[in-house]
Image 1 (cartoon, helix red, strand yellow):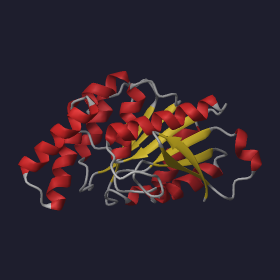
Image 2 (cartoon, rainbow, N blue to C red):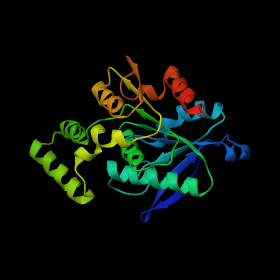
Image 3 (cartoon, rainbow, N blue to C red):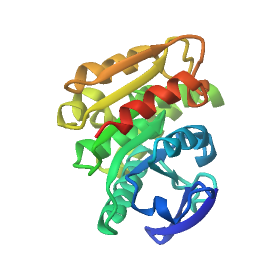
Image 4 (cartoon, one colour):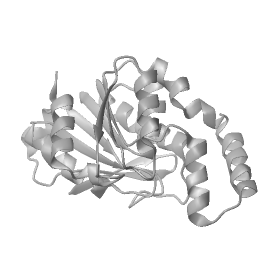
Length: 237
């Protein structure tokens, strides 16, 4: 992948595109691809290749404090701000944003950004967590943290960001999302529940949910049938 950096809050975000794309792709509609918490841009590479075959221009974003992007701390609202800023910059530079596609916590952040007016024609949410609060419970369980520690972390987060975790959930963001939205979630996902995807489907008017089986949380990013379904949805004018 070829890379460039974009300044963001006194730091830099990594942006990548396929090195095989020539200058003729510069005018193609852009699809922004966003990884999840603890992930990196390379996880979206398989989808990027399929989208490029459809004549689109995939741009992969590395979120704050992930991969080569600067920072030591990040959270969902910060993810949302980064997504919104990158999209605004791309639009200001004269590009058309056909869609934004995000995985896991990146999808939660994309939902918040879309509810705040993100200028993308379509959205794809891959294995989204419905509740940031529940995600912190998963995080705490993984690292052996007590509930008291988790709750203190939640309150610190809410005070620092100036919003409650409930404001990140589908009932809060869904009714304000106006873009056609595709949701893909595996029934065997052990990180984010399938019910989380159903919550987004029910909260976003006209959203379509594709259920897979046996792929878990990350294999959906490489499964050929999933990639093709996402590409067909995104390629629609």
